[in-house]
Length: 305
Image 1 (tube, one colour):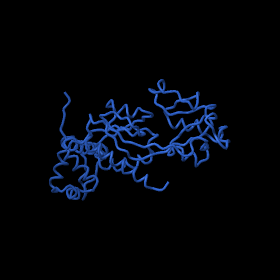
Image 2 (cartoon, rainbow, N blue to C red; image 1 turned 135 degrees about the vertical axis):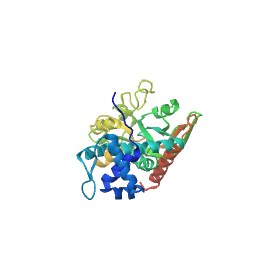
Image 3 (cartoon, helix red, strand yellow; image 1 turned 45 degrees about the vertical axis):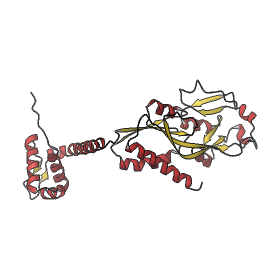
Image 4 (cartoon, rainbow, N blue to C red; image 1 turned 180 degrees about the vertical axis):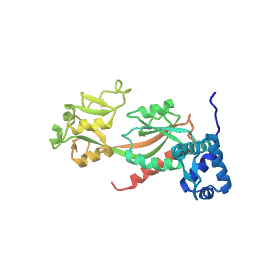
């Protein structure tokens, strides 16, 4: 039967500190231990592994080839120990192990979302964050069914009674088409013009068979991805109402154009909400994530356009 040995974390810490600092005395100072303790821990590690990790022939110990071969693995083990200890402390303090965030890209500029996630990670590095694409009404559905803890959605007035929500900003939609599209050459676009051309809409797959008829066009394509959506628009295929934060770089690049209409003279506004269910209480990390996103979006709203 193969023999097993137990390696204590303190032995690995002493070995790594000595390898990093170049001496047992410097390792002892960095660990706040006596030099004899560090030397004993390393000697016991060598006995337990049956390997000579340091050559002690010179004035200062030098890593042997065997010691160098183990060093990266030891550092990986120590990092795992640190994560284990941090997560154990977090769970004992009531901190969530993971949070799932369902995101409707229509409702939020993803660069602003990234700004809010950076400080969250710094504060809650042990919490695993799952970021899900959720077009249309699917974010609300995920929160309702418990598959997402928090949703970022376009505002609506009929949330379920067991939902909590916080209005955190607003976005505006503009009517656009690619510069090669026939309507991009018109001085004024009527509802009949829209009716005569293909309408592109963002929707998740579950909604595609149940969406109401759109009276602006009887030719509609449904897409889940804004990446493909904008590729079709810039190629001159179809027209669409697009959130300004998604349309702006394409407008600046000159690949799409806002269509001048005789029925909608200003961009159409929507609110942005964060939603969560009262049936699944958020822990400190979830509450902090809501606060971080709210603060970043509030700051963005305060900046001049």
